[in-house]
Amino acid sequence: MLTLFSNAKINLYLEIIGSRPDGFHELVMVMQSVALADRITLRPIKAPNISIECDHPLVPTDSTNLAYKAVSLLQKRFPNRTNQRGGVEIKIEKKIPVGAGLAGGSSNAAAALFGLDVLWDLGLTRVELQELGAELGSDVPFCLVGGCAIATGRGEAIDSIPNPPKLHTVLAKYTSLSVSTPWAYKTYRQQFDHTYKPLNELASLEERRSRLHSGPMVKAIGSHDTVAIGTHLSNDLEKVVLPAHPKVMQLKEVVQTIAAQHNGIGTMMSGSGPTVFALIETAEQAQAISNAVRQTIDDPDLQIYTAEFTSRGISHH
Ligand code: ATP
Image (cartoon, rainbow, N blue to C red; front, side):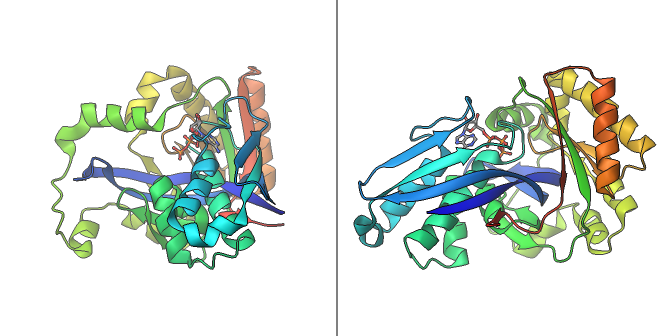
């Protein structure tokens, strides 16, 4: 049996560059793992079944669960190595809000890949695990690596940014509000495809990089310049998600105002939302912001978490 913790991520930067021949968007993101984690327990069993148990009512426990898909992909891809192994029971204890833009499902899939590689002694390399992860979802390769990274392509090509500052976050989300990631990208395409840059499949990596605007954020992280990190926080998907969800727009304004009163570094929506996060230097300041937001918005539907940056996607402890 193996118990793992799969960390959530936030997007410090998310830019939509254009359309790809495969129908996905070409993206550049700066992702950061935060210490808000689901607990995943993997128990190998003799029978060749995959079973999922989860304490969150919105998470499917059938073959559409991303952790289930991860196991089935391993079985399909490595029949010789997995045939003798039987099946697995997976228990997911959810802490990461669902449909939140925090890659909860993707992180569970990453934990299942990572854990079964160990339990079934598959001997997969890091690159092999990342390639399998990319087949399950664009955020899975990042979740396997974690820490701070630039993600390009459709989000699956990961370059780690070494030694990022250890900041703290306040994360706020209305429990009853979820945003579907496909909806957010589809709506963005409908409204903004005239801004897309033409992408030549054969363009060199260097040419493609020259179209990106993430440089100042990466530089700010590298030099631990928190003021510049705050200035360069950016997320193209805010342009479609905030107008469609005025409550999230208001939440962002409240969090931003309160964070500014506590020397906050910046406030932004993560991924396709609707989670809004504020960055701050210390755990005490994060708690103070959390308390003040809670006092200002007296709504039991509002979930608020504090979590620090972490250097891992999957951890044991
Ligand atoms: P991302 O930031 O990667 O777009 P998200 O945080 O917006 O992801 P998730 O919490 O991963 O969204 O869930 C999106 C949907 O995926 C859920 O509504 C749920 O139906 C489905 N799902 C499948 N497997 C899982 C899982 N293990 N955990 C959570 N959701 C899952």
